[in-house]
Length: 99
Image (cartoon, rainbow, N blue to C red; front, side, top):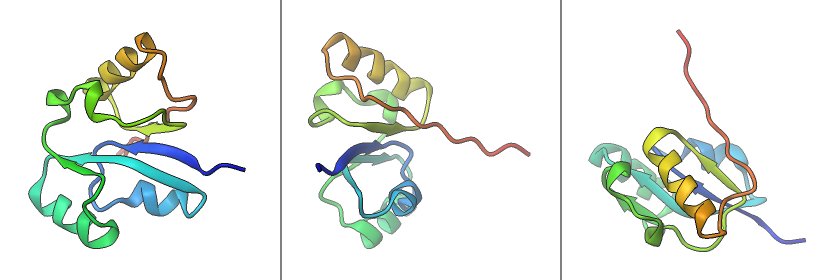
C-alpha cells in the first residue's frame, strides 16, 4: 500500500496536513503570508514549502503526481495545466468558511 500524496495550497500553519494525518505525504506546500509560513515551517519543516503568491506559480514547481490538492482559482489554473500534462491529481478537496 503506497502513501497518498498531496499538494497543500494556502497552507497557513498546515492544518490540512494535520487533518489528513500520517497516511498522507505532503509533496508541496504554499502560502504567501510570512507569518503563516514561519508557523508552517515550525510545525512541518520548510523542505516542501514555497513562500509566494499562488498566482505566480508554474506547474514546474509541483513535484510528481498528487492524489489530492487543497485550495482555489489561481490554483485551479495549475490543476488544468497538470491535466494537460497528464499529471492531474485524482482528488481535489476544497474547503470554505461560510459565515
